[in-house]
Length: 477
Image (tube, rainbow, N blue to C red; front, side, top):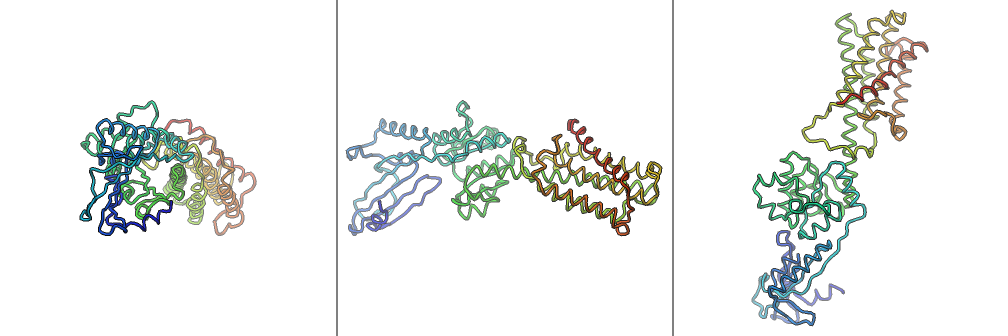
């Protein structure tokens, strides 16, 4: 059917655009050939909304019949049956005005033209994505304008609702949620999984309630009416294809393929970035604590510091630049999706991090202080070689500790290391530059050349941080 042909034959008098509150749209038209003649009203929208506006219907033969109570119940059952099969049910209705003085869209006494059930199947992979989110400790709530039966069917199909789940508290309508008292809303918000026949205000209200309950809230949306909820949420995710410009402007992340499975990718990468920041902070604090303590104690006891300004600058370069590049570029793993989410009130430095960094810092301080006060006797060397041994051991401890920092909880610190070429490259560059600093830049770095035995001792002391890290991870945090 070519839609332009009938449009050219009619004059458009009035239009009521689709309204998310009324769930319907309508037009007032007149045939151009009937100049000054009859006008017609046509409505389309949510089936139960349109049915409520109708008092008559066309039967199969085309005759107009009145809708009695029995017929209305039967039609309501048809709509429910369609919705239970996850069909979106739309109705069409019209009426004719015999004279041309009517300029309003009549909203009652209409004749029902028919009902249509539209299938909007879930995209492939959505159920798997929902399961991945649930396993990651993320609660998914579906907020839709569809009627309650369609919403239940789609939510069950997606895996948001389980077939054996108690639906009385898990599924509600927007008007019901809106009319709760603030106390009731806060009490029931965590149990609600699906909200049907909702308005944009209901969506915003749910986001506000969840935030008040202490949750970190992410919202997906594509329409202009989703903008308030997208802006209010901690993370707003808009759709790149179907999304309006207003929705995109109000969001933090734009999903380019409009696919819910991309939300899992966002979640995985978000957790990866957070985890990488924690790794870097643990590594950085270990270096800082060890360097501060060794220089402070040495300065108080002997008036001299074993680590010079240039050496500390080199350590800072390892810690801030190379360390950040090595640890902050780790790619996400599937393990991240099995951990519970971190709440907004949780500290950035966790107990696990404190356990790891304190153990490593104490080990480094103990070793370096031993070298500071007993190094000359143990190795039978002069002051300059002793200081070089302290500097070399300290730097190599950080190189080995970088491996420990890769895994905050897991005991196998080498898992997946072959996939991170940048990490291995940075470790290699750090070791090469350290050799150059000690062996060839003696005047610049204030170091003395070390023999093979001394290098072996430095490496051996530094390498002990690996078994120490493994043992420490057995201690519950």
